[in-house]
Image (cartoon, rainbow, N blue to C red):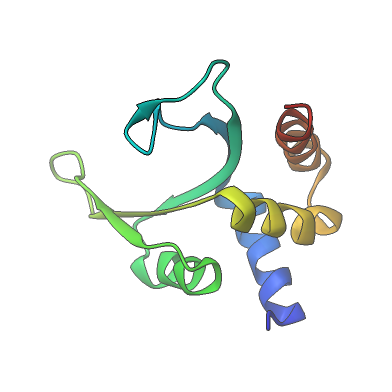
Length: 116
């Protein structure tokens, strides 16, 4: 069960470091071409040089931490991308705690998903 403190932590972190968008699903479904138009699904992602923080996002969402090759002379980067029903659920949980710009983006992503 997700704790309220975790929802509040995630809202605060995603407000500052999160990215919300939609992505089309892959072109193949069970090895066969997916019928057009390709549906979109909601995603959010975070990227940071602080591995422990990205690991907390990973633990809460169930999605893996990915290492990102840094530019020369830069710290290592870590990313976590949440998608599908899990991302939708988190977007709905954190929505009341987000600033206006993030709320508008979440609303837009979820509206595009619902309109399919």
